[in-house]
Every structure is written in structure tokens, then in C-alpha cells.
Amino acid sequence: MTDEENGRDPHRGPSPGQTPREWFAGLLRAHIEERGGGSYEELVVATEQAHLRVAKSTLGDALSGKRTPRLETVQNLVTALHHRQGLPGRPELRDWERDYEHLLDLQSDRRTGTRSAADARAASEGRTWPRRFGPLPEPAHSFLARPALRVPPGPGRFLLTGAGGVGKTQTAAEHVRECLLAGDLDLGRVLEMGFVVRPAP
Image 1 (cartoon, rainbow, N blue to C red):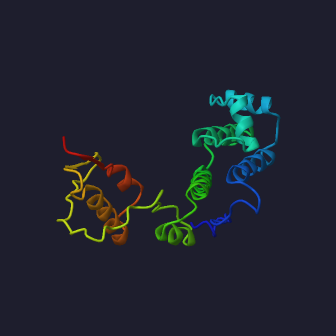
Image 2: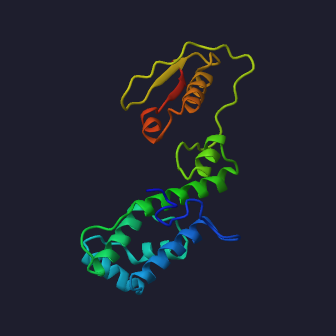
Image 3: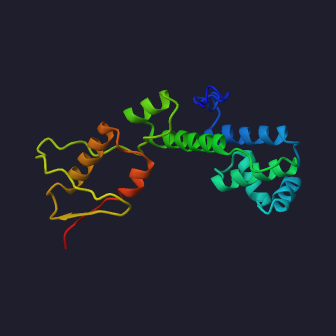
């Protein structure tokens, strides 16, 4: 089911003058009101009764927009409210995970001030990935193409070594650009490709 089909707007976000944290805090406060409301103390009791304790100070920071809560805090609060209402099973948390990823995207945009073309395309399609934080190094004008990197499947970190100026950073950046063009770069792949580039001893 798409976001449009289930009634959630994949492009929603802060209103003018509102920070991403304030927007997300508003979502949490609205959800709490829909689930019976309550003071911070009452919400803490609800999380304790669900065996998912959330500290009062953590709630205060999250609901005021003062700090970005951890995803686990959001999940625990939503789950505790679900149990407080006597609803069976566990709540559906995927929408909250999407909104939380969107919050992180918005905060990243404010820090860098730019979005990659891949990010813009993903956002227009209502997707979160692929996502880039910061720019890739620009291709060097004098860079000579090297043989393609052979990255083994599965998780791991890969080390490129060599004397200074031989093109280690450019080679790693070119590999990432090729993956982006091929559409072969997603969260799992990023986690697997933890390149470390350093001069040889």
C-alpha cells in the first residue's frame, strides 16, 4: 500500500517557520491527544506499565521539539499508548519509522543546504533512499580511470591503500557514482561498503 492509499502524505513536513523537530514533536503530541492525552507523569506511568520505560525528561525534550528523540523512544511511546487503550497486539510502527526518517532527512538538508539529484528524485517519488550526506569529491580533471573495484558480497569494511596522490579517494568516489547510476546503492549496500582510505605506511 502506498502512502497516498493509506492517507499519509509522503511530502508532508514543517510549515513555514517551523523547524523539523517542532514538526515531529507536533505529530507526537497529536498522536497522544488522539490516544487519550495525559501529563508527562501519566505518560511515564503508561510506558512503565507496558515495560517500556521512557524518562520524563526524555518525553519533555521530544514533545517540546527541544531535542531529536531516538527512534526507540518514539516506538516505545506509541506502543505504550496502544497498550493503555487496551488494544490487542502491537501497533503499526512503519508510518512512524517513515516520518522519523523524513525528520532525519529534513535535518540533514538544513545542515548541508543542498540535496543530491538522487535525493531529489527519491523525495519526488515518496522514497527515502538512496540518500547522500554531503557531496562526493568532484572528479579530478587529470584522473585516469582505474580497473573497477571488486567489492566482495556481504558485510565488511574495505581498505584502499597506496602512496599519497595515487587516486585512492577518487577511485572510491567513482565506485560510489557508478553504483548510484546503476541504482545499486541502498541502505544495506551502504552499510556493507564502509570504505577506509588511507596512505600506505
